[in-house]
Image (cartoon, rainbow, N blue to C red; front, side, top):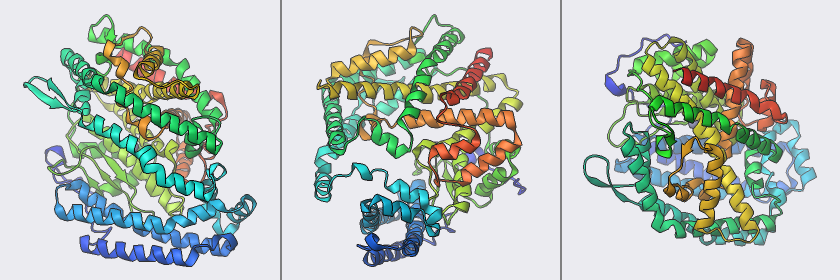
Length: 597
Ligand SMILES: [Zn+2]
C-alpha cells in the first residue's frame, strides 16, 4: 500500500507531471548514449555476423546477453526521447532529439537484423537443440518464436526482391489510404456554424447527448466518404489480391494464418471463439432494445448506439488515486504497491496542457527501467478507468521485468491488453460496491457494457467481413465498392438483427477502417483479450486470493511462453470450446445490471 500523503492537486490533476531524469540525464546525454549504443550494435554485428551456423550454446548465451544489453539501452534512450516529446510536441529540441533517435534506431535495427535472419536460416534440428540448452533457457520461447515464420520464407534472393518492392507493392497503397482518410474534411455544423470536420471529429459526435446532432454527423460522414468509395475499394482490392498471391507463394493455406502465427494462436481456437461470439449476438440485441426503452425510443437507430445514458459525477486526482489504491489493494497489496510507485516516483504525467499529446499510454521503457504512464486527467469518472487501464499495463511490465530477460519480457498482441482490462474490472467492481450516486452508477455500467460490445462483438463483425472479402477475392471476383458494401451490411445485419436501424449511408462503413489496410484480421486479438480477461475475472470472483497469486505469476511470466501455455495455469484451457462461456456469462451479468439501472 502507498503510505505517503496524497499531494493535493488543483483541478485536472494540476502539477501531476512526471520526472524523466532517472531515465537519462538530459538531451545531450541521450544523444551520447544513443551514439554509443549504435556503435556497440555495429560491434555486435562484426563479432557475430556469419557465426550462427557454427555457434555453441555458450556462444549463443553470450550473444543473447549482449543483445539484451543493447535492447535495454536502445529502449531506454528512445523511450526517454519519445516521453519528452509526448508532453511537449512543439518544443524544437524535443523534436530534433526524437528525429535523431528514430534515425539511429533504424541504423541499429539494420546492424542487428542479421541475427534473426541467420537464426531463422538455421536447420530446424540444430536450432531446437540450441534453444533447448540450459544456457539459454530464459529465452527459449523467444528463440523458438523467432522461427515461426521460417517455414514460409522463400529463398534469400526472392526475399530480398520482395523487400525491395515492398514500398511500391504495399506501402504506397497504405499511404494512399491514409492520405485520403486523414485529409477528408466535411463542412459540418455542430451548432456554431459550418466548420471543416475530419472523420474522427465527426465520429466523436456519436457520443453527444443531442440525437439530431448524432444523426447529422453520421450522415455527413457517409456523404463525405461517398466520392472516395471507388478509390478506397480499389486500394483494398489490390492489397487483398497481393496478400492472397503472397500466401500462395509462401504456402499458407488460409488468409488468417499469418495473423494466427503472429499472435501464436491456433486457427481452431480463433474459429471456435468467433463462432461463440456470433452465437451470443442476441445478448447485444437484447441490450439495444433495452437501451431504446431507456432513451424513450421505439427502436435504436445506428446513431443512438453510443448515446450517453446519464452523466457520472466528477472525481479529482487524489480521489482517483485513492480509488485505484483501494481497488488494487483488495486484489493484492503487491499490485497496489506497484501502482503507488508510479505516483511516489513521479512516473505519471496526468495534467493536460498545451503541447501535450492526447490520449493515454503506458510506456514499458526497458526491462532494466520502470514504466511510465501518460494521460490527460479531466476530473471525470472515465479518467479513473483510463488510469486503472494504464496502471494495469504498468503492473504487467513491472512484474515481467522482474523475472524475464529484455528479450522475453513482452507478451504478444493477444495477451497485451489482458492486464489493463483486468485492472479496469478491479476498479469498476470496487466502484459498483461503493458508489452511491445513481447517475454515476448507471453511466459506469452502460459504458462497461458498450465498451465490451464494441470490443467483443463489433471487432468480430469486422473480422467476419474480412474473411468474406478474402473468400470472394480468392474466387477471382474483384472487390468493388458495391460488393464490399453488400458483405459489410450482411455481416452487420447478423449482429444488429432488427434491434438497430441501419441508415442507407452505412453501406460505406467499411471504407475508412485502417486495420483492414494495415494488418489483416488484426481486430480479433481485441476480442480474444477481452473474453479471456472476463473469464479470468469470473475465476477471481469464484476463487479469491489463491487466484490472485496465480495471476501475479502469469504477469511475471511476460512473454516467456505462448498464450495457451500462459493461460492454462489460470484455469483457462483454450482447447476447450467451453472456455469462452464464462466471458459471456460476465457480459450477461453486466447487461442485467445495466437493465436494472
Ligand atoms: Zn491498453
